[in-house]
Image 1: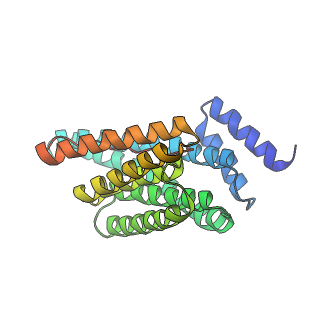
Image 2: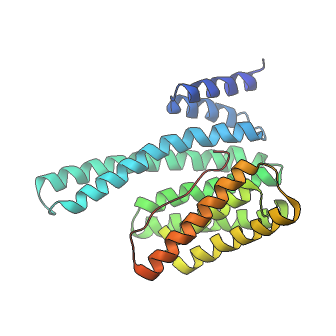
Image 3: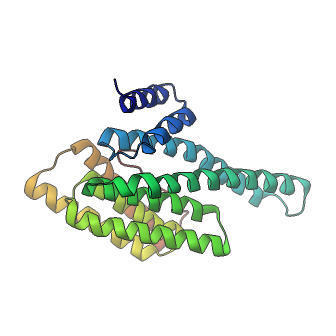
Length: 248
């Protein structure tokens, strides 16, 4: 087994053991080999970072919610604020690290439409995660970078991937979440999600599609978000972030 194969094997082992920090280290090593990743390697790369960042995003949301429930200036408020900023520093570090790896080692080696869309979609995702907790200039910069990455991915996807391709559907799903949660453009979010859903539906009816389970999941999430967002627009209900990483 060559070194690339060993790294992939160890990443799989780390995933099974739910040691995601180790998984990230193995996949960072793979990325630094400067290879055009296979679908399996993309999945492992994304899953490792997704789990690492996901736990911290959840922590940040809990702390932010708790902070809103206490009186500003009280000791409890100050303690929560300090702890929240610690989590934000960790989030910033993880996001910047993966964005650097994508820019240096992943996108330059991406030779297929799938890989180009996949990694630009990831770039958009991690800038979106930065924008979630950032403020003022930093937030605007992260949001602008996220928008540009998603837009580039959408352009490539429109010519390289079929409307029912799981990666294209996952991109549309996350792009619509970006418009809803970060840009506060609710109508635009619904437009992106509905267009992707309708185009995929026509594609499936006319030609059928491979990867049916992945497609069904994406379609259901798009449908769920559309129903939720339409309800929120009409009734002002609480918001929910429902995004996904296809193939991780």
